[in-house]
Amino acid sequence: MNPFALILSSPSGGGKTTLTRLLLERRDDVGYSISCTTRKPRLGETDGVDYHFLTREEFLARRLRGDFAESADVFGNLYGTLRQEVEMVFSSQRHVVMDIDVQGALQFLAAFPESVPVFLLPPSADVLLSRLKSRNTESAEIVRQRLTAARDELRAVVRYDYVVINDDLERAYRQVAAIVDAETVRHSRLPGLEERVEGLISELDRQISSNLTVGRS
Ligand code: 5GP
Image (cartoon, rainbow, N blue to C red):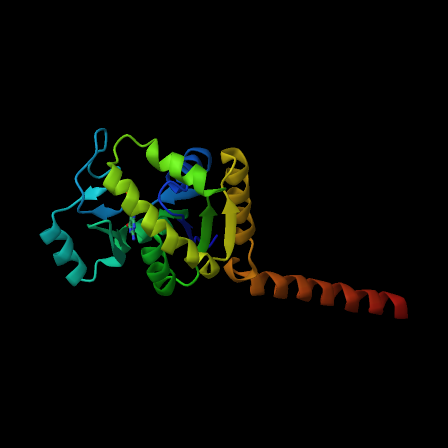
């Protein structure tokens, strides 16, 4: 198989983190690229598991070295995907699921054009709002910032090959899983396809000519 990156984008509160978790729990052909961030760990988050937590200086130095496939400033903190993390998942023959923001997603797509971009659309503004407000970790100011960002992020939907409306988690999961399955058998991703087809054609040619020979005798 030729593994690819599944880019899941949505505004904050759109459900990409929950869907990413489900994909990782339920499918063994999918792995995760642990991002770097300069934000402080939240309660229960572990360095090297949820994120690689870096200082701003460390992050900027790694960015200068070209370690990131994409990076973005999200609400005042820096986030980035290490090329090395993505390559590690690919080398284990798994697709990599990327829970990254829209700016980063578009950069990543330019660097890895074989990626599959999927936009998770919240079913309504009310649902998005209540999902954001139910996160006890966010202050009113942060909720306001995220809603303002969501307005702009929604417009990027036209850049995505697939759009999944996340009104029912299980249905959204099934649709995303179906996208992964379909993309796995995309013509351009099938290794050795030409050789396989040539082999089939040669076998048919042999059968055709031996039938002709039998027919003549
Ligand atoms: P949080 O701080 O709540 O974990 O994530 C905030 C936002 O940053 C989310 O939209 C998340 O998808 C995004 N994010 C997480 N990792 C990355 C990354 O590596 N690159 C980019 N561009 N965004 C990321």
